[in-house]
Length: 241
Image (cartoon, rainbow, N blue to C red; front, side, top):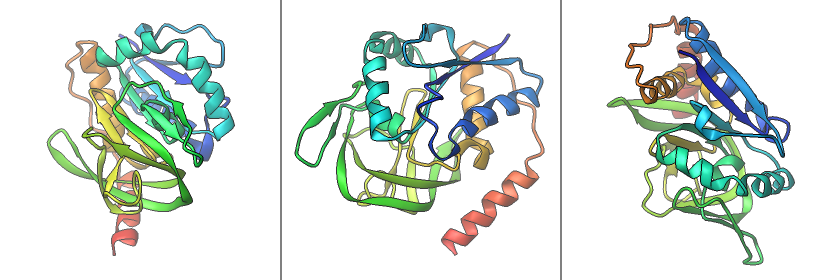
C-alpha cells in the first residue's frame, strides 16, 4: 500500500516555501514506515487525478495563477469527480482562490474559477499580512493552527464550512472572523508558514483521511512531536498573549 502525492505546478506555485507542505506530509508518512511517492505535474503535463491520494496546490502571483487556471480548467471535470469521491486536497492562497466560483477585479470584472466550492474572492484595497492563529476541529478536538498570511484577495463563503475561526490575524476577508474553507476532504487556507510543518496535527489528519479513502483503517503510530509542539505553542502564546 503506497500513498501517492500529486504536487500541482511546483514550478509556478511555491510562494513562501509552500513546497514544505508536501515535504512534511511525505516525511511524517516515512517516519511511520508508510510507503509514499510524489509526482510533480507542471503545465501541460499528463495527469489522472484518480491515481492520487493527496493533492497539493500552492500559492503564486496573479500571472502564475492565470496560467494555472487556464491549464487546470481543461481538466476540471476529472478534478471535480475525485473531489466528490473524497480525494484529500490541500489548497493554499492562490490555489484556494482558484477552487471557488470567481475572482472579482477592482474594475468589477469577474474571472471564473473552477467552481468546485461555493465561495468567491474579490480584490481588497490593501494586503492582509501577518502571523495568524486559527482554531479548528480535528477528530472532535479543538486545535489551534498557526501560520503566516499575505493576500490581497478577500474571500467570502456562501454558507460553506470554514477551515477555522480566527483568533489572531485577518482570515478570509478581515471582517467575518473566518479562515479558509472545507468541503468533503478539501482543505483550503490562506496560511503559509508553510502550514503543515508548523501544525503536525493537521498533517496527520490529512494522512489519516488519505488512508481511510484507500480503506486502510489503521491507527497512525504516535510520533515524538515535542519540538514541533513547543514551537507552535511559542507562536500561539506570542500572538494571543
